[in-house]
Length: 268
Length: 305
Image 1 (cartoon, each protein chain N blue to C red):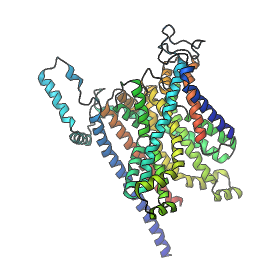
Image 2 (image 1 turned 30 degrees about the vertical axis):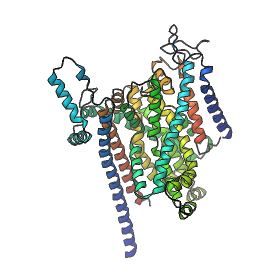
Image 3 (image 1 turned 90 degrees about the vertical axis):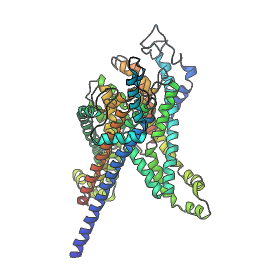
C-alpha cells in the first residue's frame, strides 16, 4: 500500500510539473490552428493529432491539465474556507445558530449536485470570455461545494466547544471571534485538510461534467471537460484511441487522489 | 406483569412519538424547501442578467401600443415580491409557467418527460443497488482480501470517470441508459455499503457467532441485516438524489427525452423559470424519498429490537 501511495504521489507531482511547464513543453499554443491538418492522426509534428479545428491536441491537453489541476484545488480551498467559517462558527456558537446553519446545509445537500450546478451556472451569462468562464466555473464550484464539509466541521467544532482548553480560555476572559480564531479553528485543521483533499477530485470531475455538457470553460481555453467534449465527434474509441488521452490523464490523477485520501487500507 | 406491559407500552409510545416528530420535521423541511425554493427562483430569475430585456422590443415592425404592452408586462415582473406572489399563486393552481425556449407550458413538458426519467433513473438506481449490494455483501461474507481489493478497485475505477464520459462511452457501445445510471450510482453506494457491512461484521457478537459455527447466510440475515438495515434505508433515500443527478448527463448525451435532458436544454438556453422549477421539483422528490426511507426505517426498527 505504501508503494501504491508513493506511486500516486509521483504521478500527481509529475503531472503537475509537466503541466506547469506547458509553455516550454507544448509544441504550439493551445489556440494555434494548423488549418492544413484538421482531425489529423498522431504524427511527429502532432503527438496526439489535431482536433476538428486543426489545433494540436497534445498542447491543448497540457494547457487543459494546467487549468483543471490548478483551479480545482483553488475551488476546494474556497469551499473548505466557507465550510470552516459556516460549519465551524455554527458548531462553536451552538443553539439557534447551529440549528439554522444545519437547516440551510441540509437544504443545500438535498439539491442534486449537478442540478444545482447547472442551475446556478445558467443564471450567469454563458457567452463570456474564456478567462471569465474559468473564474465563473471554479468560483461556482467553490461557492456551492461547502455544505457536506460544513456538516463535518460543525460536528468537530461542537465537540471542541466543551473541551477543557476552550473552557479554560473562556474562564481567562477570552470570548467571541478571538476564541474561535485562536483555539477552535486551529484545532479543526486536520478536518479542514481532509475536507480539502476530498473536495479536489469531486471538483475535477464536476468541471469535467460541466465541460462535456457545454456549460464549463469557454473555447478556445482548454480544460479537461472541454477536451472531453471533443469525444462526441469521435467515430469510435478504438479507431481514434489517442483522443482518449485527456480522459486517461484525468482517471489517473483522480484515481491517485482517491488513493491518497482513502482512509481504509486495501490489503495488497 | 402489568408493570412490564406498561414499560413496553411506554416504549412503543415513545417510538411512535419519535416517528411522528421525525415525519413532521421532514414535512416542515419539504414545505420550507418549496417556499424557499420558490423565493430563490423568483429572486434569481429577477436579478439574472438580461431579465428586463425582451428581444421582441427590437422588432421595428411592432406598433407603439404593442411596445407599451410588452414594457408593462415586464414592469409587473420587476417587483420581486409581486413576482414571487404571482409565481406561488399560479404554482398552487397547477400553473408552473411557460418555457421561454420551448414556448410550451412547463406542466405539459413535465407530464411528457417524467415517464422517461422515472424509467431510466428508476431502473438504473435498482440496478446500481443490486450491483453495489452483491459486491459489498460478497466482500463482507467472503472476508477475503483479493475479492475486496477487486471490488474496491472496480468501484474506484468507475468513480474516477466523469458521468458524462460514461454516458458518451455507452453511446459508442450501444449500452442502455439505465446501465449508465447504474454505473454512476454503484461506486458511491458500494463504498458506503462495504464500510457499513464491514463494521457490522466486526462486532464482537458476530465474531462469537462465527466461532460457534453458525452459517454465513444465517449470520447475515439474523445479525448483520438488522444492524445495517436502517442505515442502508437512509442511503436508499439519498441515492434517489444521486440517480436524478446522473440523469442529466445520461439523458443529454444518450438523447433520452426526460427531465435531465430538459434541464440541460433549459440551462443552455438560459430558460431560468423552467430550470428552477425543475430543480425545486427534483429537490422535493428527493426530500420525499428521504422522508419515506426514514419512516420505513422507523417502522422496522422496533421489530428488530
